Image: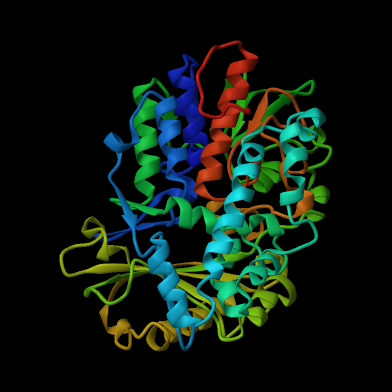
Length: 497
């Protein structure tokens, strides 16, 4: 297995529980990939994901690995889930529907009844689409399945997420409050396919969770379960090549020159990076360097991790700050490629929920700003400092942290260039391939890889897509496909793959 990210760890712990011999080769000194822990002195941060949605999928994959997630992890359901901050008003999003109705009534008077319309309609969409997101789409027949035919009326073809949500809420800003989740896919709500309007429904239906120790604790717990099931995890052991012979994966070559043979190879590296760097060009047809250039990729993100010698207790666990001209900001990220002064940003102040992340009286702020990926041509070696200063000014003015710079004891920055160079993310596109209609389901790189046999893809670059729950699902789909291939009986909550 190439890479110990959440998708690879999911597949590894399930396969090992079913009796397979599994070895994982991870280039970094810790598991998790973009879901790993980042340490700055005594401060602990999540490198990437901070929202845990659809917890039930995580519970299921632990169970299928012979473990209990509640024994391995401590979960905290957040309510309010997050604060959505406009310049002149705010909404505290809650799974309590009456409270949510009141929040909308206060911020957008007269629009409060729209929430139930949204929730009912998107619930119907989700119940129809969920089985389609659990299929493997390894064959054309699986694409033209009865489940998918039944869901066609629910796909909102030709409409964007924003179009769908504005139809429910009427007010453009209120529609934005329910459409920012398209950023989970690295897409503009004006371009993201309308079917993904169900993302906000999922949060309001199933809640948003934090795990004590950070969401990176999930990957650490998965690694513990995997090792207990017999998986060998090799850290600081980069793979240099997936060995492909006569149209089949035969194993991997490591950076130290050794060769590891295997019956099946699971690739959990960033998909496009793996195609460019880990697979010989002659083994590829669609996903060559030229083929990748024709694909659409997500945006990138600019990150600041700030260790502070104070606690801003008024700042919620999650806050999203909308740019005054949100449409212009989004169009710049996905269109012109310019860096905007009027930018949206997200701040996580997890210490208000989890005091294990910093010493007493200290805290850590995780600051995320969506920016264009490296195809925009931005020279981050020149722009990083100025953009960092812009973000700090936003924290002082928009977030009300006037004295923040006086309290910084530790600081770390990740630019799109760093995502590419240090984390091996193609074009710095952290949410991977864009989730356009032409890059979804059967048209996305498949879990049983179509370019050569005995190879399986897990992670955000394959089906079902970006985001922790879907990445866990990709690992489970791969494990089920391998188990069926080798006629190993198993029980899985995913009855579709």
